Image 1 (cartoon, helix red, strand yellow):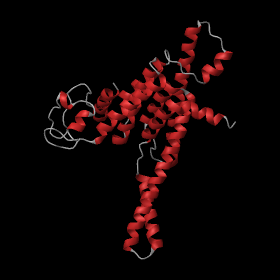
Image 2: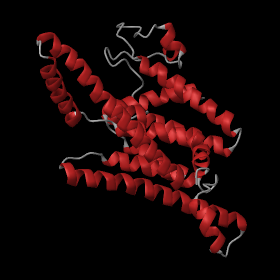
Image 3: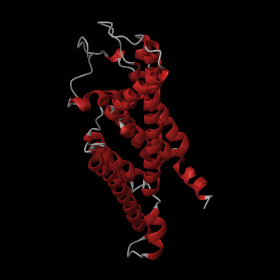
Image 4: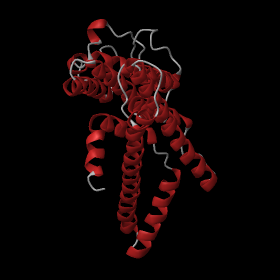
Length: 295
């Protein structure tokens, strides 16, 4: 099932940013427009059999298609292994599917389609009614506030509250960070798609894991950004050093070049937010419990 959904996810990643329906027309080669036959559309196997090329025009098929199918299958299997044959497994397979699609769409096009973010937000809120989101409201408010409902209904209401609070906190944090950056630098630092992505994550995971996701994504994104600048500086230093005998001047020119890259490079932050959200969904509680031992 994971491999099959991964194949469909490839369709979503390619078509949604381009405004094409994911239902029709049938899949075709983007080079020669030849329809892809059913026997050439089997997850993983077809790519291997065709050696990553179109049967008709022999144009290359990106390994990304194979990678996403395998990764989706792995995530579905992990959800089953981690949560068993339960509604929680269903919830987190849906979450993994949506977030994985957003990660690769953002990486490829720097867009986060509303069809994934907003539908995911709604699904996260609905899932909170059947799979508990045990977070701050459930832990603290439920002890002090008594609701005139049965235990089954009360549990669902607190879970729904945690889901809504998670969505609000996730969206507000990213929106606030983007607004501060806009005032500081005079240019947009974060798109509204990131805001909706974190609303989705908050609706599924609740406040604690949402905050952990933002912190981990900021840390990993910073490391990636600094690493990119350092790599550019080292490469440009080596290049300029070949042209000039003055090593100090070569390093200065290389640093100026690296600064240009830093200012102009648009990093798809949704990739880091989504990746860390997937990590948090499986091991986030363990990380928070480990961190709590220090206090």
